[in-house]
Length: 86
Image 1 (cartoon, one colour):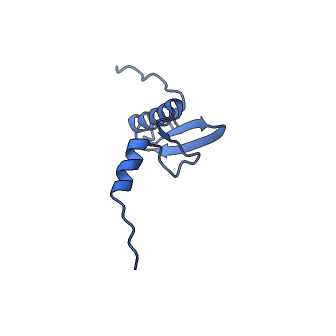
Image 2 (cartoon, helix red, strand yellow):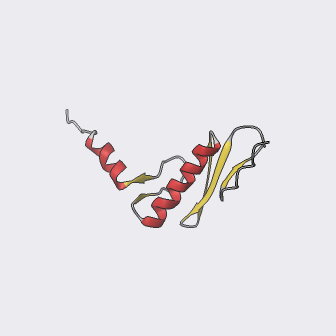
Image 3 (cartoon, rainbow, N blue to C red):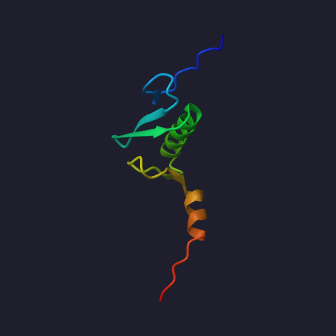
């Protein structure tokens, strides 16, 4: 029989066995809840949010619609964007 996985703070499955995992964290006093696919993806999302917020190495939005990004990721996406004038 496989061992039960250890619970991770803020990561849960609303309906056991559904395969849809959720993340629930608080950033700057604002509650952020987001539905994610697998348990591993949910854990990675929550850890990235917490790490960026704790270290100050990026931007953590207070909405689930925008991703948390490090300053290196932001700079990488800006380098590929050009604005042309007509």
